[in-house]
Length: 248
Image (cartoon, rainbow, N blue to C red; front, side):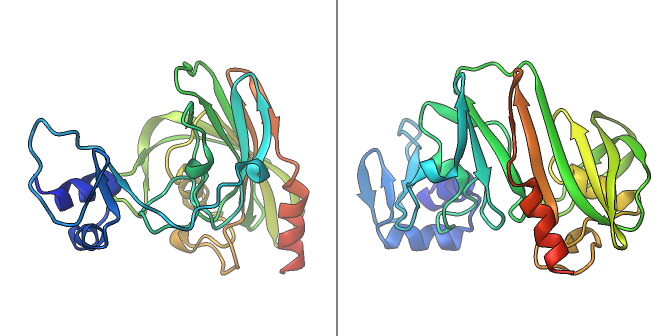
């Protein structure tokens, strides 16, 4: 396999970009910087690193708390949970120490709590609570357990058959012509809450992908996370709702 092909496979980037990184001298293989798109031998170590120049390394400013080996971070909106390409700005995964791994992820525009555990930790229990602002008057209670088809990378589809990660929704309050909705679930599939709410006729404000009204950001916030009964609650829920009320 060519070096560019392996880079493309690892980082999810195009072969063209992979070749660019190689010629720029940004690719390291076995401690050696490479500038040519060489053929990799089967017995070579295929682990590659892409040099990055703009990462924020002040992890403490993102940490909410550390409890029994679990690190709870606050992920602001417009920051990736994990690096998508080598040229992305700082992702939360950049801030996680080598001893830990992220066990939860939030969409780029979603903010809230994200957790990392020690690498050898077995996850026996998870729980997450989100709040979202949706269009219309949401029902007082709604339960959904539909399966999610995430075969397409950009947008997921809600299926008729039963899935493994049900979600319980409840309406907290009304704000003008919108509802503040709470969602509780153990572990979310990619875009699950966004797709569920849109499927039920109440897309999240700012969710252009799933038919939400135009807004400066996606109005979805992870308010609570529990890992093996070790829990943390966001202190920014009021800020999240204040942001919405100040922009409508």
